[in-house]
Length: 70
Image 1 (spheres, helix red, strand yellow):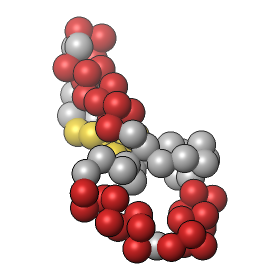
Image 2: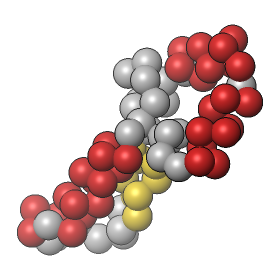
Image 3: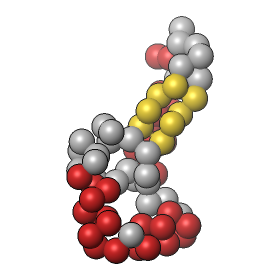
Image 4: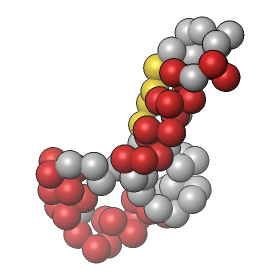
């Protein structure tokens, strides 16, 4: 199984990338996300915890997109 995360402001590099877009670019990016917000590290972690749990015990070879709905 695999996690395919969307843009999350989770470290110095993603923060720099976000700042490089400028306000107009940031708004454009958010308009392309169904939930209209960037991901947080916890959003990604929840998917990882699900795959590691017994609830995903019979799931194999899947990719879980955690991207706020692109």
